[in-house]
Amino acid sequence: MLIAPASFSGAEPDDLKGEIRISMNVAYASVTVNDAEYGGVTFEKNGKVCVVANLAESMFPVTINLKPSEEGYKSAEVSFEWKKLKKLRKRVKGGVHVYKLAKTVVKFAKGKDAPKPAKPTKPDDKPGKDPKKPDAPDDL
Image 1 (tube, rainbow, N blue to C red):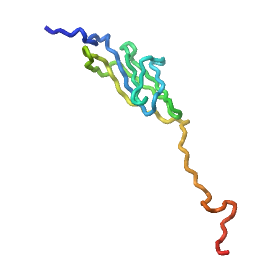
Image 2 (image 1 turned 180 degrees about the vertical axis):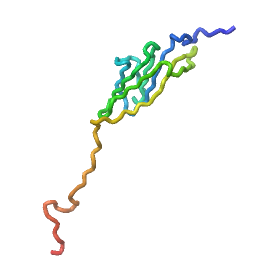
Image 3 (image 1 turned 120 degrees about the horizontal axis):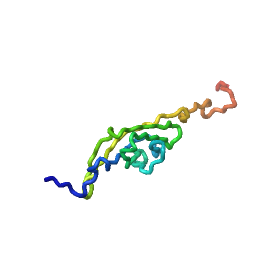
Image 4 (image 1 turned 90 degrees about the vertical axis):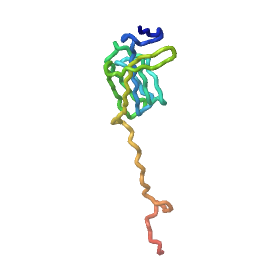
């Protein structure tokens, strides 16, 4: 006879929640899920990792739009299917937590309006010479 503990959670497929972790090259991007604001978004690693948690199966397929917080980068969009998420089990105090997880990396591309690094300018005048006087022979 097999008895499951009462604290076991996530046994029902309806109870499963999805979590998406996105590593980025820009900190604290603006995030929308399916073209709407979503309250389950948190940031880790100084804003370089975006965690979109508590996604129900009914929300999938999910499209996440990321708009970088820094100027000069283009927005990015990632999509996920429910069946592409990996099912994981995590031991927690009082039982086991079962959830689905997807991880991805987003590198924001520099946009056309990205500021280009300033090129160092060459000084036309050598130090110690007066720019108003033309080069004169020193044999006078």
